[in-house]
Length: 248
Image (cartoon, rainbow, N blue to C red; front, side, top):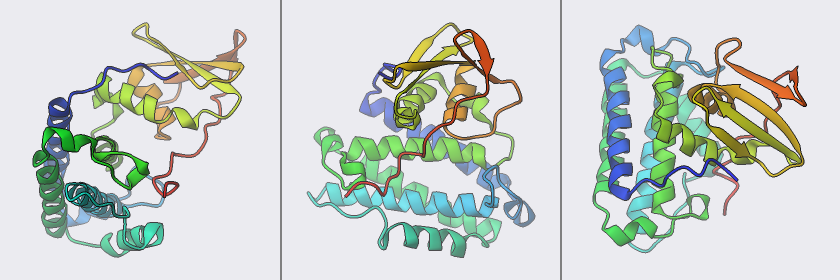
């Protein structure tokens, strides 16, 4: 069912990618060697882990686009998830200057790849999620915006735009358990239905907090509330993140 979010034009999506990338670059400029070793908002990950992951996913998505422009498909990561995880661990101990260079270079490459697309190439097939180049661009948008907040340097989901939140809720609809429906009610008066089950749970909060909750991110106490048949209940369990490695 989803949010029925308005589709972004290719030009608008490219603008969003540049804005999100600039936000990450801003944080890179401010980070010290000591700061990159501090814990991030993700359990078990330092800020260095987050930055190493951002470098890797930017390069991986750039490669999807570069191959698609030649009419070819390639795996997201050489060596799959194991190689991805190993690269993050190995890259998590770099200096602030090394992150500025590495992540900055990866951002340059992936943005250049999307900028070079001809209009019809946004629909070129990629192996990533058995989708098209546009799906890779949306994935980059998610990675940059969410992981910017994950750095724990002051940016939170409260800075996420309405367009981004609606897109994220659409993307994360598969996290609604089978047989259930989440009836989201925002403080702005929106009504969003996710899932197609017969048992509906009402979940209320700000749009940004609802998106962050479904993304598995920390939210303030009481920021999101749930009720079932008119009675307050704990927030419902959600399923796993839609894996990029579940598609072949």
